[in-house]
Image (cartoon, rainbow, N blue to C red):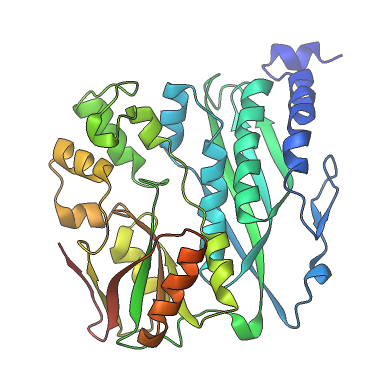
Length: 343
């Protein structure tokens, strides 16, 4: 039926098999507003179920970047989907919006249904962590565009918040305290530099174990999924006044923290105020990279930052401790207009 298309490199039957395999993973993510729509042309979601008075939709899209190259080399594909979800939902979250639904896009050189299933399993795991529904997606088989064993992965998330609760940084003032939530490692940023420094230049073996990494293999450390902070922030939103939030992604502290501030404001952050992550020491040592450049590329162990009034610090940390979420007072907002890091 599709012999000519198969000869051109596209296997329709493999595509149908992939859809069959992922249905159970999609079902795990169903939430209150999700409408069954697998196989439809568009994903559907009923926002009225959530009782918003003046709903504002907040959307975000992102990919996993060259972290995928580590997944290819390690032949491990069941966690990379968590990264795709995390990079989108954490961005939406900083404006006070709760992620509602997610869609993924997978482009492959050849459709291997078992690999597609692993990727989507990771996406579903991420959606469960973020308490949002996976309501649709697309898998495109594009021979000659990608190597047979390579793929690209991107995602798109929509969240919602009442207009009165939208966080835009306007409440932040000098003297407000910065509370940092730890990252799980490199998350999904800086992997072009990581691969050059650790794999190309230092020629480290991905399957070798490293005592300084807690006995994990390098592949295990680098493929550790990006943390999703939705549950932690949802636990706070109705109980304390969060003035602003920042997701620490590519660009590190220097680029991401100012995005939550008003013009003319700055921050002072002490990098010794929280436990360091050994992977960053390994990267810096192997690449002879300065601390300043490291902080301009990586999250350096802090994946998410909250700005709160000094009087709310104890309450915030107590609430986070209730759900076993570590937190650290890492600095304060200033009126210097600059990001000042202490190490």
